[in-house]
Image 1 (cartoon, rainbow, N blue to C red):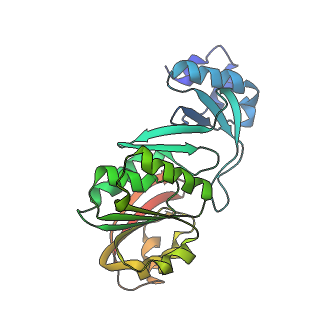
Image 2 (cartoon, rainbow, N blue to C red):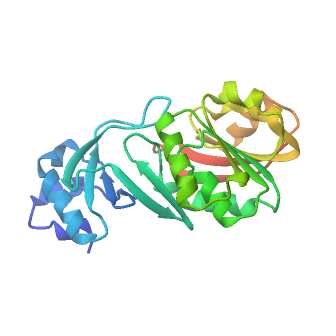
Length: 268
């Protein structure tokens, strides 16, 4: 049963239109956005979500937008167990995290699997802005790379990535996890990669020169960005390099009515 149907006759009919049409489920935690018109019904809405979804144990609401260099947002407890730490399962991988202190989007699950299926045997992979390991561990669980290098600036997310390394029983020789700024760490890595993943859509082009220095000839960069029109991408790429070929542009989210989040697969 859908939330709106369940709450019919429990909140005023003219308020039903303001109910969230979707919400994020991370492990046993549900995160919802509530419009001002229905904030007074937050506990009723939260308890209804628990009733309709037995696997959910906690409901929180977003109380700020995603912001800052760690891409986190503030959450307010509504009902259930008041614990922001959970373990999320996705594409054969397990992710332990604090949903307020670490960036993680369950809506990118299919996209992470898509990337993992593109990886050829024995490729060397670099994941920039790697967070809790959402790309690295899906890759290692669903493909056979030679090695995966990962860089994350958020100390808390890095701590969880180290825990997730053990949780997923990954061979430590297959992965290197760095905590720090990509601008400082990447120049110290004395190697080039077959494939580089850049999951930072708001700022990825600012870091493209770093990636270009570390990609092998005929290597592939997966660059996430926000666009209105697909032809924007080629013009932006030309500012950084003339030697590239766009293989595919995959829509993987909506930022606003006119702006989409996309992954640009680029052969260098």
